[in-house]
Length: 129
Image (cartoon, rainbow, N blue to C red; front, side, top):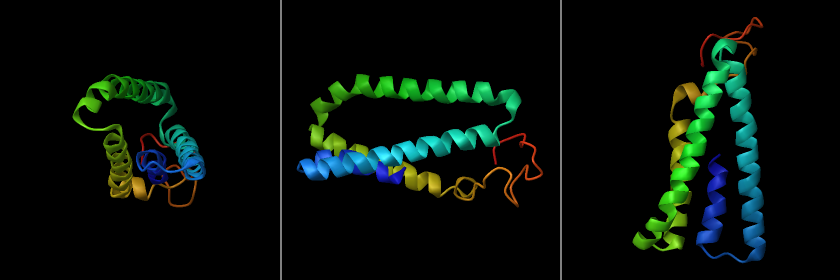
């Protein structure tokens, strides 16, 4: 997910079309990869009895975050230029990624069913690792 910050960074720096294209391809690929890994992790590390509820909360948080960002984008341009806001966006994406990787439980999350992981006997774990 850290590579996603390349996308707003390219736009903020006024890069030319080839760099913008490469930045969007890299950022889009990073987002797609993260999305698959997130969905797989949630589905394999969450008890089946609560998986639907966890997925609903995650989706509600994501959708409300997007809506809040869109509402605040206009007023934010009164405080700073769009380029500055995109630089802040790139920094926030990178900082969020680094903060998540600083958490040992996230950094060392094992594939469900792999040796040493909870539920490696084939059953799903009762909670997220």
